[in-house]
Length: 152
Image (cartoon, rainbow, N blue to C red):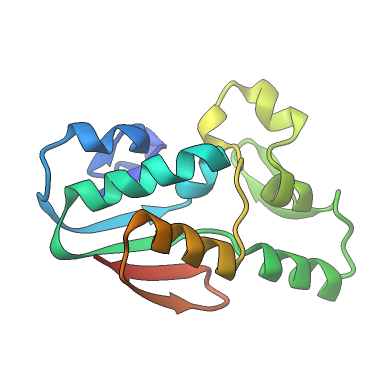
């Protein structure tokens, strides 16, 4: 299952990931979640991860990609950037360092496209903790690419 919150990306399923528990249980071998988990508030992360577990078959794999706050800060320092400087350009405008760490800026908020907003930041440690608390038992992370492969 390729899950996204942006319908223009043409994923297999576009939905509120908190509602994945309403789908048939254990129907997918894998869930690919790119730039999705961080678009929910911190208090919703457990619901989203519970939805991943709900739709995964036994031994299924979740591939999760999120910005790593530690890597963002290293990049910021290495490039001599400030917290209000631009990290990259999106279709809605510039994404700044503080977007990734603290949430979206006024420009993104005013765009009316809430799903592009970063609301939750992760370090390697906080992501692994969230996955462990959600019930994932095996996790493999790829540093620098901000990816985590995890299994039930």
